[in-house]
Length: 234
Image 1 (cartoon, rainbow, N blue to C red):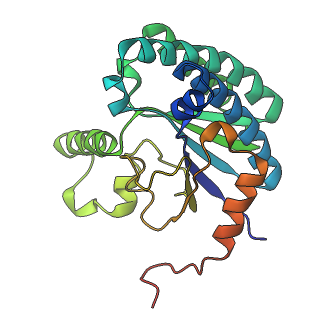
Image 2: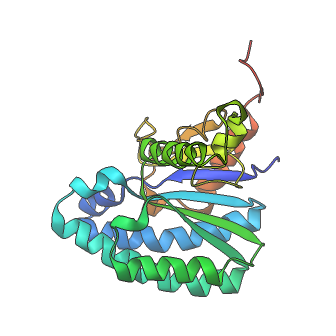
């Protein structure tokens, strides 16, 4: 079986999963956070080299304030756990997105996690946090424009590769496979540039129930696709 080098996942269905069990939405988020660690371990053992998960989008700020506050608290707790996991599994962690809107404490935790894991190379784990693909591209264009104004870049030098270097995912290969859980069939402003040639896999299974067997099903489905690069399938 051919293993995709890079898998991206939209972690969907935590709240609905909790509701189906008569529990509050935050219970689903806590369970979902624990599942991220399990899937990281499974993915690494399968031979997947890069895993990128959508943890909190730029649109998620519109959720009820109590839920947002709990998510931020949960993310802070997860950063502590992830620091230990990174060392244990030789895992480099990067956070994608604009972290400037996050609390100073959470920003500090992110920076410490990225610095502490920067030399690890066994597995590469990316967390999209306060991330939106349109926002990412706008920030990239502003950086690029500033360098053009400073004379560091000319418009003639701009290529797809150059532009990719200004994105949050600079230096990371594009995903081979995108997985979205819980039955939704949309990208939700996630990695729009990077997913241009990725295979998509949608499952009705909510994220807290997405386990090793479900990941293997997604990879098996990926193996049944006929990949074509640089053009359409005809």
